[in-house]
Length: 115
Length: 111
Image (cartoon, rainbow over all chains, first blue to last red; front, top):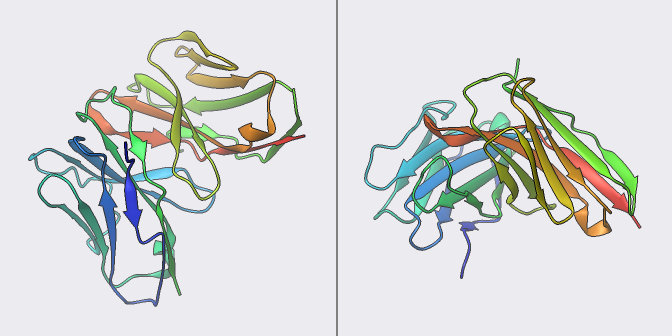
């Protein structure tokens, strides 16, 4: 079946602009995660959605970052007033039930470059 | 101090060599230990998963966990050029759903 898809694959923007990144999880997966991978850094957790529960936003680095998940499926990560330090690969993952032992399946990522 | 430390490499070995990749972690709350493989311009994919101390083998890959010393390893036997990738260790805990990743080790297997 289809895996996790993300769009766009690459995004170049100017400092101060807003960007939206999209994630389509695997069909039937109730849990969805956003991570950020900066050069030379491991994946950094941003936000987690599980079903209809309130999202875990504990990893969002600032209030410029927000995310929503509509209808329990597609998710959008929005970065407002982008800064150069926001340049990174943004990875989305989904898992079946959101249990700690569930395998997280990753998408190919969106490579964001802020000029 | 980072919760998970991983030597970034790069590591370059000849085909057929045994590869040892390692991570150390500081948080005793971690209960689940994983290794992900990430090819260039791709998302990470789960390679190995374990939740107890000891060894777990899957083909050419062996994951080793030592909870007493907070040390995890991945061994690759008979390495192949197709194993060239970045290997990320990851830890999880029951109280939180997100994973904590190491920075990754870049491996190149030369033909």
